[in-house]
Image 1: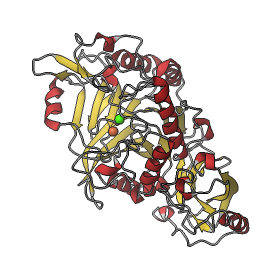
Image 2 (image 1 turned 180 degrees about the vertical axis):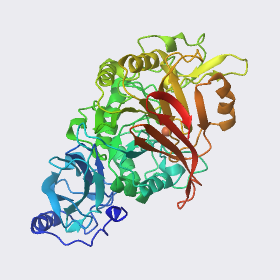
Image 3 (image 1 turned 45 degrees about the vertical axis):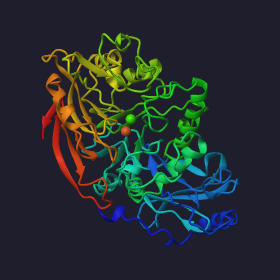
Length: 524
Ligand code: FE
Ligand code: CA
C-alpha cells in the first residue's frame, strides 16, 4: 500500500510524444525557466467514474506584478494532463491537453470521466518542459455497490501565520480515501498575535482579486498542504475567512456598503475557485457560486457538503460599533429567535431536506462548518447567553434541520464541523432543553489545524448546562480521522504536539464510536 503514495521527483520524467509537443509549445510562453508547478496538484469530487484534477501554473508564485499573477504572461498556455494506473505513470489510462487561461490565473480544472469505480489512479501535469508532482486518488465505489470501509479525515482553520501545517502532514501519512476541508482554508487577515511563526507574504489583509490570489498562492506553497492534496482527493467547502471574518451573505463585519462588500466577495470566491479542485459548475458568476452538493460512496455513505455563508441571514443584533459575533441574552436580542432566520437560505435548505428524504448510503454525513450543538453560556450573573455567529445564532434553523433529519428517517446522520478551533463530540437533539429528548444525530467537530482555541477553563464551566455535549477540548490543534464501516463509525481526535514546530508529532487525544441505528456518541 505504501508504494501507491510515492511521489515522483518533479523533474524525473520521460515525456511521451504528445506531452513533448505540448511542452515545446508551452516552453516558448514562459519568459523564465522557473518551475511552473510550485503549488503541486490536487484532486476533488471523486465519483464512481470521474474526478476533478487541479493545478496552477505560477513560475513566480508570489509575483507582486498585478499584470502577471504567478509570474505568468497573459497568454493561454497548453498543459498536458495524464492519469495512469501506476505511480510511475507508465500505464496511461487517460490524457489530454487543456489551455491554462490568464482569466483563471492559469489554473486548470480537469473534469475527467470514463474511469473505473473504486480504482486507484495517479495523475500529473506537464508544461514548459517540466512535470508536476504526481498525485493519487481513488474513484468512489460504484453506485449501489457494497463498500466495506471508508477512511476520511476532516480539517479546518489553518492560519498560516499561527503555526505549521503538521496536521495536514500527519493526516496525509494516514493515506485516507478522502479529505474534507470544512472552511478557513486561508485567513484573509494579517495576525497581530505575538505567537506568529511565519508571515503572510504581502503583509496586508486580502480584500481584492490580487491579494486573495496571493494568499492562496502562499498557502499552496506549503509542503505539508501539498502533500495532503497529492495523497487523497478532497471535498471542499468554505467558511468565513475565505472572504472576511464573520460575514453573512452581503453583510460584512465592517459594515461596508453591501454592494461594495459583494464586489469583495466576488474576488474572494473567484480566487477560491481558481485554487481548488472544483468543477466548472462551481465557478463564480460575480459574487455568486454554487459549491454545495452531494457526493455518494457506494451504499456506504452520502456526504452532503453545504455552504453556510453565501445565503445566511444577517447576524442577529448586528450593528455598530462592533460587527461580528456577540454573546447575547434572549432579553437583549430577541431577533436571534426569529423563525425565518436561516443559515443555508431557503433554496439550499429545501435541497438539503430533499437529500435527507432520498438517501442512498447507510450513513448520511453533513460536511458543514460550525458547531451545531447548542452551547448555553452562563454569565457571571447567572443568566444564560448564546453566541450569535454559529448555529447558536440561528436556533430556529437548527431545529428545522434536525426536525427534517428526524422526519426523513435519513439513515445514520452524522454532522461534521469546524470553525470553533476545538474538539467537540455531541448528541444532537431537536429540543436541547429536554435532557430526555431523543438524540437524532451525532456531531463531531474537529479542532483547528493551527488557529488558537477558545479559553478552555471558561468553556469547560459551561458544559454542565449542556449535557448533550459529551466531549470538549480546546487546548490542542490537529484534525479528526474517521473510519466508516456499514455497522460502525469510529472517530479519532488527533492532536499534534506543538503547532510552532514544523516537525511536530501526533497522538490520539480521544476515540469515539457511533453504532449504526443508534444515534449518539459512544466512547471508543
Ligand atoms: Fe477559523
Ligand atoms: Ca470560521
